[in-house]
Length: 351
Image (cartoon, rainbow, N blue to C red):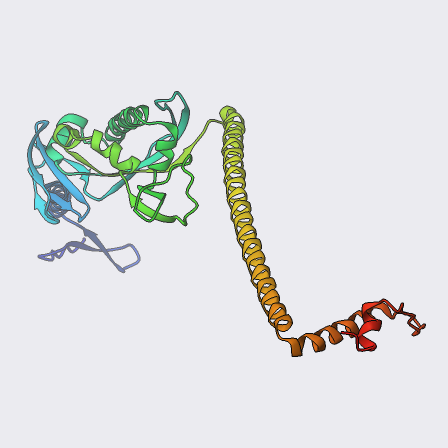
């Protein structure tokens, strides 16, 4: 006969086996198992509800809390907030500065020249509620609108400018050559005085484009911080023709400068020749005047010498010796004089 003993916590049954040993069996209560499963399910539901109640807002995010699809409130402060589970949903809108690289596009200048403009835009969301209402919180939708807006603004700006104006205004700075009075010298001006280069500030191409964009923030709740042109080029099929035309224009300008330089050089040469002729004429006149003065002085001295009887004989004697000296040339030093020669008469004391 089996002997049964009941434990208050664990119902155990003891009985003897056929070999005389005791056999012990344990059986957990069905009520305890059901209670554990219930608490486990309850914990999972609580964790799930808690996770669906919490809204974590990061530093670079806006959180839009929707109630049955309508935006109820906007969370812009980083941190932890709460919402009603299954009733309210959350949309995330970026808060940081975003970069959108526009595809390269063709635009036509006012002088009918085609140019390729490749630019990028820095933008951010400033009004998340309007951003959600107009663009459905979609960055792709925003970039599509930005693409159209910036392209139209760029096209309108460049279509009112000539090609050289577009190239010149890209950096917002222009180098000009001015004279001493500050007047700008154009390519057709000829000024031999030294000009100096100055860098002046002008309205850049990006500033002109930004001036065309003034409704984006009010309409879509976004701000275009900057529009920058990273590439401004010509179409490949037009480059060679443009280069050839530019070379021809530069050749014409060089030829014009050369012709103007030769003309100015000829004017300077003629002026110099004229001045030299005048100087030579003046020098010859002064030399003739000096020679005349010398001859007058010579005649005055000569007349003074002949006027004095005592000096006349000596002067005649010296002149005769000079004449004799000039007549004796070569190795033959013999002089044959006629008796009537003035030199013979001087030597004979007839003067």
